[in-house]
Length: 164
Image 1 (cartoon, rainbow, N blue to C red):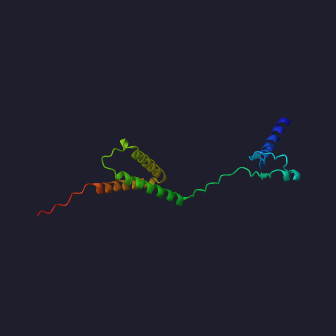
Image 2: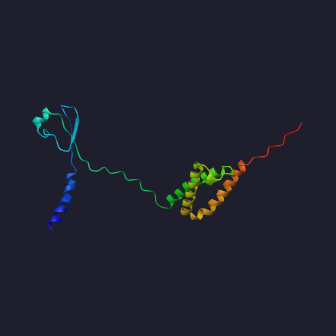
Image 3: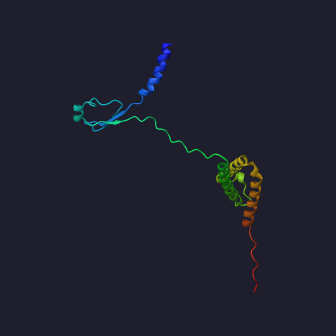
């Protein structure tokens, strides 16, 4: 039983020993800066301190705590802002895909288009999860945007030439 008490006491005392101050001074012979967790032999003796280099004591301040991140806003207003931000990005991607030529095969396209397609799919899935009621509206909006962009990109017939 005394062994357990001794172990418990050691666990309580040992972390306190780790909180040591540091001592800094310049070695007179080499000019090197010295650091130590124990003071040099002359430290604390006024007579010896006058003949030796000054010692700077660096006090232990404990572990540095990382700043805590600001809490995320809670509630319906924060969720609405999140959904609005995601929908804006989703609409950008819809416009990007609508601006591509109609013959584009997205699955065999280059890596940039594949990344955009993966981002679009992930964004659409997240929006459907956060706002299931808006899924139908987004799909109809998607179809309308794609149709409008394709109509704008379609070759326009040239006006007839005036004959003289």
